[in-house]
Image (cartoon, rainbow, N blue to C red; front, side):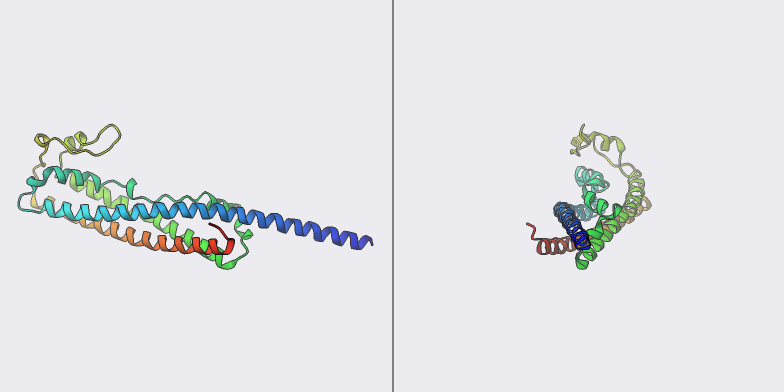
Length: 226
């Protein structure tokens, strides 16, 4: 009888632990689901912003290399500032739950192997995209160095309001620095570099968006989430 009571107590305690762990699993998954859902909205915005940036880069190159670039000088200056910015195009993941899952060992609570694999792959791709920003920053620094030989920094300063929002300069204030064909060629090459890294990042962000959408569907199906 004593053995039976001890065994029963052990089974009850074991069942209780399983129940508690299952509740924690559901809480983690729901929190992760909400984080990734928020990520998808952010990724979509950034993909759209990068599409706009590509158009700006193309227009900027066409105007600057036209026979009369000064006819477009105000628009050129505006685009020249905007394409050198980074924050509007940077994906910052909502990874609080992901970090907690990894750092606390709570990922083991998720019993479905396919779900764990999908979560891990998503996290790896997020880290890869974050790692690409160092390459983009390097390209932008090269672009700014080349742009300093063509554009007047005083004009750029006039185009920034107190909130760092870009506004068009007054028509009578705008002119280019005297620049050589070699300096223009260098600037063109830097524009080409920015365009390339922008397209590559947008491609990878589209891949990440598809992966996030698939992961949300898996979590929704396996854990009955909405």
